[in-house]
Image (tube, rainbow, N blue to C red):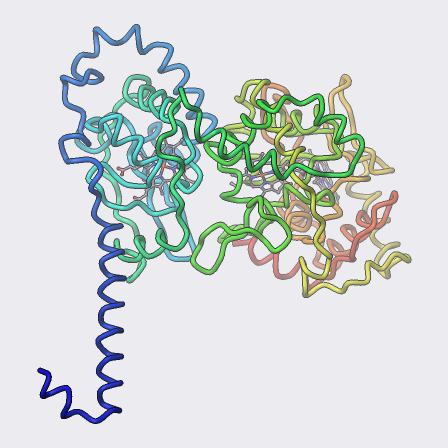
Amino acid sequence: MNALWSNWSPVRRIFMALAVFLALLLLMACGLLFREIIATDLTATEATNTPAKGLNGAKNNVITQNDLQVQRGAYLAKVGNCAACHTARGGAAFSGGKAISTPFGTVYTSNITPDAATGIGKWSADAFYRAMNEGRSADGHLLTPAFPYPNYTHITRADSDDLYSYFMHGVTPVAQANKAHDLPFPFNTQFALAFWRTLFFEKGDAVADSASKNTINTIAAKAINTKATGDAENLKQQVKTADSDIQRGAYLVRGLGHCSACHAERNALGASVNNQFSDQLLGGALMPMRDWYASSLVDPSEAGSAHLPRQDVVALLKTGIAPSASMLGPMAEVVAGSTQFWTDADLNATAAYLQSLPQVSAPINEKSPTKSTSSDKSKPVLFDKGAELFTQHCATCHGEQGQGMRVEGNVALPALAGNRAVKLHNTTNLVRIVLAGGYAPSTAGNPSPFGMPPFAHVLNDEAIAAVTTYIRHAWGNQADSVTATDVVRQRRGVMQ
Ligand code: HEC
Ligand code: HEC
Ligand code: HEC
């Protein structure tokens, strides 16, 4: 070997040393990925629920002890909105099979009913917690992050056990085999997931249990350290807000509530990322595969709530409607399936947390580089035509002055004057709601919401541009004009 080495020319030596070095590096990387793929924390027996452990086998003795736990779990399933993904339209509750399209292909949700053969009936509580906290199935294989475990990872062990009880005892078992995902190579491999996780996934605090409340504290410590806005009104509110509220809110928003799954931008590999202005993972994002913009929850000109009255933030999440805002599209679904069921205490905590976040305004041209930065404050060309169309088509509902409408004191129709959804730099939602119409979610607080009719078949592209431009400039609103080209692009999506 030595002789061989000394026979080589210096260039060859350098080259060979480099090759060996690279090979070692590759080996190490493969080793790391393999370690990620192979689960070592739970053995196959630990991952399954043996009758001795209680839940399924010894159902009768544990049911009373579990009753409360099942109820708490049912509530947490609402908080996490599990049904939104795991209950397919027309399908049995939690039996999965719902298609979720992602930029990488279509994934199908799993059967999470307690059916022993096709669902999670054989899972142990440990395996369930590992799925939530680590994104691994009971057999140890890695799950796709279309299952929002990057958020759920923050769940406490106690909350996970409550959820587990609910899925074991409060949900009807349904025999329905899981559908294979429709992902092209390499996205269908465990290697790809291991790679993704190495780069982007950070497991929530493993020692979190209800006693130590570790997860809550570490999350909240961040939230509390960063709460700082100069706004006097906001400071007053913060003083009144118990830190424990903000901690609870942080736990809900970042964990089970998985708000960042939509409200944070995704990078090219589909991981939620901060934008350059805010490190809260809530900076606003165009939702991949769906033509909706989930507005920034930290930008006061979008859906930042620091300067809003606390009761308006709570009302939006509870009823879907507030004096000058309403929840639309995917957000209306979130309210309908989840936040309307949150307790007042949890909604208040969530609002407290959202209001405690540092507010940032991105410069307009950073957010929509294709838009002109001049926010044409003088009357734009389409203004008069838009005003005419508004009187003709919109004023009966939204009011001649865009003031909205109340029925028996409750907000029935959102005001358009001062409405942030109307003024948003990104006009995706605005054009979309006018083209396709929509309903605010039906909630206990707003049981039969008025509908916004679709105008796609009533108004052409230029007319829609005119009327939206008008409402972006009338009654003190100030925002860029909408052009017919903006409408054309969206009309294609709506008509599909
Ligand atoms: C945004 C959609 C979405 C939501 C919300 C969601 N899930 Fe899932 N879940 C998925 C997808 C997709 C999978 C399949 C992942 C895979 O197979 O790689 C999955 C898989 C799972 C699994 C693993 C099942 C198995 O057989 O490996 C469990 C357990 C689970 N989800 C529980 C929950 C619970 C509990 C909630 C509510 C707190 C929830 N999920 C909410 C999308 C979702
Ligand atoms: C499935 C995707 C999705 C999830 C999950 C989601 N949002 Fe949204 N959200 C949206 C979209 C899209 C909009 C913009 C449409 C609108 O204004 O209603 C929005 C808008 C909002 C608004 C502003 C409404 C307005 O007009 O002022 C608030 C506040 C909000 N979301 C809070 C939350 C909170 C809190 C959570 C977590 C509990 C959450 N969202 C989770 C998609 C989502
Ligand atoms: C029949 C009554 C009705 C008419 C007519 C109507 N709207 Fe609406 N509009 C509604 C309702 C109800 C909502 C709330 C929908 C929701 O929350 O999903 C709404 C919501 C909106 C929103 C979103 C507001 C927010 O807070 O997110 C905009 C923008 C809007 N309408 C513009 C218009 C324009 C422009 C016209 C005329 C071209 C019009 N509407 C005509 C009932 C109406």
